[in-house]
Each structure stands twice: as structure tokens, then as C-alpha cells.
Length: 468
Image 1 (cartoon, helix red, strand yellow):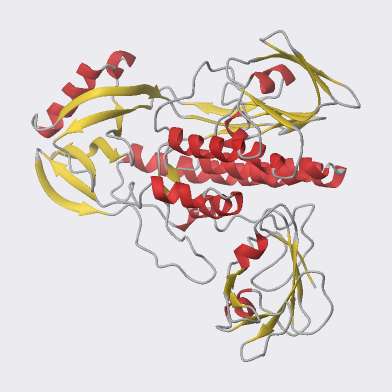
Image 2 (spheres, rainbow, N blue to C red):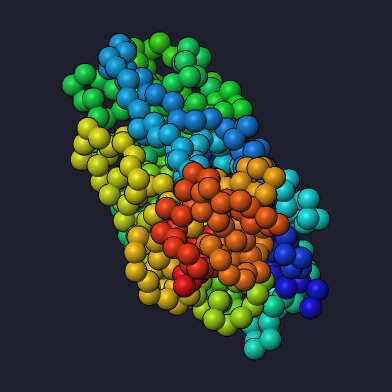
């Protein structure tokens, strides 16, 4: 069996999974039916937890260099700027949370960075290659491709989007709703005369919560735009003249649009697959759950699906493979609730609809109570995200816990005395010898509620496995 894992779909979910497998020397192929790579913003918001995942995958520096921090939003009412708002409160990094604020980068650029990283492991996306059928047995999956090739793999992962061929072939219900009464116009366009250091909200004074949003897309000349479509407005509103006419009504004609890169009419299709697994076939990303764009959760949840599944597929143990659906479906259900709640705020015209809080950052995602997480006590328990902290080695060199976690391994931390195959962390004021590390600021001991002899095992995906 030359291929251990076949991934259908080369968006952020499939690419994250492919990197996770490739860096563990697992034979992986990733195919996509598209003839060329998507160009456009789509999911352009990366949450703090995704930035932590990207640090582990070795792509964070490229993502930070290409993207931008959240910018203030100028409020234009009747063609006049009447104020500014921030979507996020500025948050300073802490020792345990190095990236507390989201980051913006168009999805096509994020995908390009992930593809480049994957290529470093010798794996490339196979375009023009659709999955046309598959059958599974006790030993593997036999897949047929549009190229005429038949592939035998140990596992198949459908990361092939909301219209997933894999999910439909398995007959897995996609439970939820499509609300035809709500439609949003989304796309990317050039906007002459708009300040790129700000986002922009255009509306009329009598309906300040009904308007158009423009967000600058870093590394491109475009803005991403979004607007709610009213009753009676048809889907032909996606063409450039219609987008320009809509903006002119709100702005007084001060902004000239051009070069419409892509546009679409989106309907609230809020759905969750009844199952994320059928034998040797798994679902991840939009194939398993589709979200409103409100709150920027879709891409981020998909990346975490791939990150959760990768080390488990590489290991192949039944216990780990069984845990994927339970852990990730629970998270997806919760995240869908957050996204749907924010969407309702837009529909209701709430003044704080543009605001984003901690519930969107995905730092509080936990697998507590799951099959890999024994019961615990205290603030930090098995299943929780493992915090970062700065330490010093025997030479006084600074090293972060996240640097120790980086890579495809699990990590054991031992606080104080005892034998360990992992890292021994001494309290502030200690003298480090050998491979010991010193918690000079006391941040690691605080974050891990450590007393002498406490052992904490960190999973390969950066969550706490056990505490003893």
C-alpha cells in the first residue's frame, strides 16, 4: 500500500492534515478537483489558537509577514465619517498566550503558504484530480480518481467542502438549516479612494446597522466586502455594476470600485454532519461542519480538525482514531452556536454585532470529558490547551514551552525532582544543570499549577493528556 492516507480537498483543512502526516513520514496524497488554485479571500480571519497551530507547523512567520493585525473600522453614514470602532479590544501578549489577537490574511495566500510548507516534505497538491468513487474493507480503502487511476490507501479523508462528495457517498446526514430569508453578498474588489489602514462600514443615517463592510486584504490591492441582501433583491447583485450602485447609495458616490476578483451570494447554511467517521473514512473541515462567516470560525475550526486528526492517523491506534469524532464534533457544535449567535446580532441590527470576544478565539477549546482526557481538578485539566511560558536553560538562553512542544511528538514536563524522559523544570532561583530548565518568572509553575513532582504530559497537538 504505497499511500497510507488519501486526502480529498486541498483547502486549509486538507493542507494542515497533509503537513501533519508528511512531517511524520506518513505516505500521503492530497488531491483536488479544481483545475487551478482558488484566488480570493473567503476565510481571511485567523484566530489566536490557529496562530499557535501555525507556529507548530512552521508557517507562522510567513503568515505574520504576509498578513496584518486587526484595523479600526471607520463608520461612514451618509457619506460622512462619524467615528471609529474596533472589532477586537487590543490585548497584550502574556507568557501563557503569546498571540492573543487574531490576524488577517486572505485564504488563498494562507493556502499558498501551507502548500509551500507541504512541498518542503516532498508532497504536492494534485490538481484536476477528483475523487469519483471509493469502497472500503477491513484493510483499507480503494478509491477511483477522475484521471482513471485506482488508489489503495489505509485511510481516506474527505476535506472536500460543504458539498462533500465523500460525505454524500457515505450517506451521512448533514443536519441543520438553510435560511433562504437571509442572504449576504460577499466578494473581493479594488476600491479607489478608501484608506487601507482601516476597515470601512457604509450605511445611511436612518439605517446605520444596514450597510456594506469593506476590509483591506493584506498583500493584495483588494478589499473584502460584505452586505446583507434585502427581500426582493436577486442573486444578479454579484456583478460589479450592481455592487458599485449599492455602494453609491450608501457612500454618495465617493468610492470607485474595479477589478471584482470574485463574488458570491451566501445563505446561512448552518450544518453539522451526523458522523465524522465511517470506518476508514473521515470527514474534516466544511465537509463536516459549515458556518456563517460571522466570527471567523470556519477556516479555523477546519485547521484544528486537521491538526487533531493528523497525529492520530499517523499512530493508527483504535483508541486515538475513535477519539477524533467525539472530540471534534463536540467542538464544531459549540463553534456553530457562536457563529450563529453573531449572525443573529447582524439580523437584529444589534449595535455590538461587529464586536468579537474571547469565545471566538478558540483558546478556550477543551477536550475535557473526552475519551483521551481523564478527570482532573484545578484550573488546568486533561483536555485543556497547554499554556506557553518562558524558561531559561543551563546557559541562561531563553526557551519557550511552545518551542519544546514543536514537532510531531508528545512532551512530558516534570516540575522539580525526579526522573523524566522529557524536560525537568526547576523553580525560580534554581541553578540549572544539564538539560534542566528554570522557570525564572514563575510563569510555568503558575500556568500548570505545579508543585514539586508534578508531571504533565502534552499531546502532539498541544493539549494536556494527563496530569499526575
